[in-house]
Length: 173
Image (cartoon, rainbow, N blue to C red; front, side, top):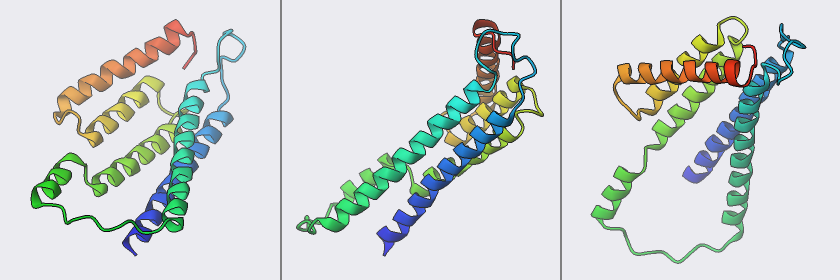
């Protein structure tokens, strides 16, 4: 019963990831580029569509992997029971693997942040939106726990991404 509940939860998450990806692609595709024809490079919606496609592809791979694992688990004989793990082994597993709840929260925060990013793409400047997106993700994944450092990384990253697209690739954002 527990594995079925977990399977359904992960299946729903993978479907939500694909749905957010499709939404992001639809929003980016409907964006009218004011500089279209003035630059011989890619449209300004190329990068959001690329990232949304990448996210959707990962969601699809995750979905298919879940289905294959479920099919293999139901078609194979149960494995012979192993000896009970020691208390040390259980504690070691707990410290190494992040909690499933934390992973789920990170996936939800990432999806919401991407949704907001795509929704505000026409209304807020690209650099400001990118800085906010990076800051939200850096704080949710807790790689560095100090918010000021995360803010500096997000500002430098957002400005660098903006400069790369505008100066190097000549894509008007």
